[in-house]
Image 1 (cartoon, rainbow, N blue to C red):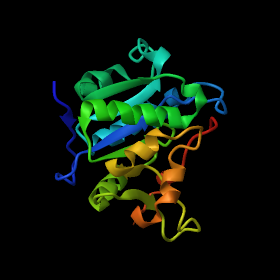
Image 2 (cartoon, rainbow, N blue to C red):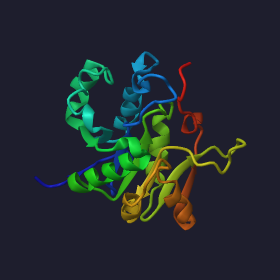
Image 3 (cartoon, rainbow, N blue to C red):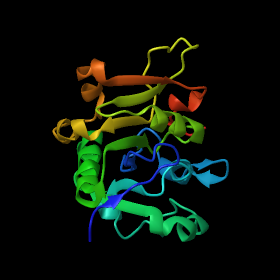
Length: 213
């Protein structure tokens, strides 16, 4: 079977693969925050639904030991899985306790094995308030060899990088060499010439959920 090409709602010339990192430990939260209800739905499902409004396929990274628990764990409502199962792809990563970079590198490896990817959009499972329109804006702004992320230009965080972030496949090898719990921040700071900062009206690009509310 050949590798899949992912379609998106905006930029038909590019295969950008969305990747949700969902293998975190939730240590500060006190329980599995992926199941925390946001507007009556599990938080991870909210992030996935936003992705699926912009892409026809979605890759999610989980812990290896969760390989037989996705349906029973309560991460998604049964109706969601019934509707979208054919568009969902699961990467079960080893040694995720060593930091976010492990999830990211193994997610990239999974994408390289299974998809034709010009770029990857990296999303975090604990950021459920990002608007679908923000994803559309980022996809539209993407160009070859770019790193694209959102900012809010009218706030005090004018130059602060928001999420999600699109990385060109040009940086995949660099991402795959990462270690620790800093994600791909070093890749971004190493390539200021590649950055495309997109102004969005979306506080969700900075808002993660680390503690129960």
